[in-house]
Each structure stands twice: as structure tokens, then as C-alpha cells.
Image (tube, rainbow, N blue to C red; front, side):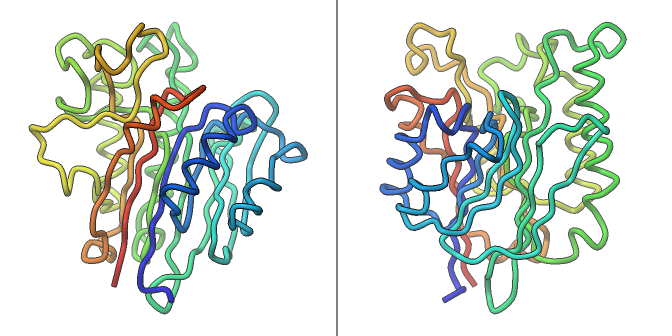
Length: 269
């Protein structure tokens, strides 16, 4: 059956270190597809066995030692695999696959956008310049033919674009991930491709949504100084098929957690 599909996205912050909570998530939520970011694992060392044991036999990875890395694991067959390099940096930050849906295929892009360092000034911080250039390349590619088909773009995009995507709009305006230059570029990528922000489609703009809470907080949940860095975008042809999204906040409190929580999106015909 390809009339229903659940896709989850999660920056796992080291897939080998956090495999126990990945297994817990797969057992409890049972998504059809899980897109992981920041796997921090070279392809040769990727932990295929526990994922296949959990029923996720179809796995596509783009990894490197100690940094970055993405993986898409699925209970359904994956086809037309693409791993795109951005900014000629050699970083492993993208993998795309086709997943069966509605008698055809849904294109699923899994992204890990550069964080951008601490200083929002490309003249003194090359990491910030890299982030801006990465978004510019995304914009140039992810429109036209790429978005005319049923497509989903998920991942840690490292921007919290709206006022209620951060715990304090005023205090974070000059903090990387919420600066106006990043937000403008982020929205330009999304709007140029006609992408729909699925999470905000179901949650009003005045309501807070967070997917990330810093490890630095003594009690992350009580402090609740979060940001929405993880996203689900859908092409216009899927607008009638996206049925809901949710953040599994509880996962941020699991044993040895990632600082991100999973986001789950549900589709049906």
C-alpha cells in the first residue's frame, strides 16, 4: 500500500552514540521513513545491522568521519538516489531518494545545512559565509522541475525563521540561526521553489514551535529556551496530502539524548 506515508526527521548528533534512542524511536513511532542528520559516521562504519533488525532494510547514507553526515532509512524501497555536494566543500550534507506513494513516487530530500558559527558576519566568520552560500545554491536548484513533482524537503536547516520559532525574538535577532539575513535567504529558498512550510501549515504563527534545546541549559525543559531548527517542506502537489506534523518533544529527555527532537509528518491520498 502506498496511500499512507509517515516521514520523520531527526538531527541525531552521532548515530552510533545514540543508536539506542534511534531504536526506541523506531519501535514506538514506526515511521515509514526516518531521515537522520549529523550522523558523524563514515560510510564504512555506519550501523546498518540494528536498523535492519528493526525492519528498516532500505538505507541510503552520505557520511564522513566525525562531522556532518545524513542517512535515510526506510521500510519501503528507495530509488533514484542522489547525493549532492554544495559549495565545493566536500561535506556530506544531502541525500535524496524516491519513496513509493500514491501509485507513484515522492522525492524526499534530507538536508543538514551548515550551522554558521557564532558571528553573523561573513567578513570575519567564513562559516557564516558558507551557510549563506549553501542557501544560495539550494535556491538555484530546488525550484522548477525539482518542485513540480511530489517532493518533500526535511532536515536540520539551522534557521528558526519566525518570531515564535525562538524563545525570544528580540534577544536572538543578532544570534546565528535567527538573524534577518539568514531568515530572508531561508524564505527566499522556500518561496522561490513554491515550498510549503508544513509545520506552520498546522500550527498558527502565534504559537511556539521548538525542535532544539541547548545542552547548556541545566534543565532544558523548565528553561524551555528552544528554537525550531528542523523543518518539513512540501511541494505544492503534496499540499492536499500532508495531514499533520508533530514534534516528539519527549525524545529530548531520553537517555543520552540529541539536542534536537524528531519531527514527524504524515501523508495520505
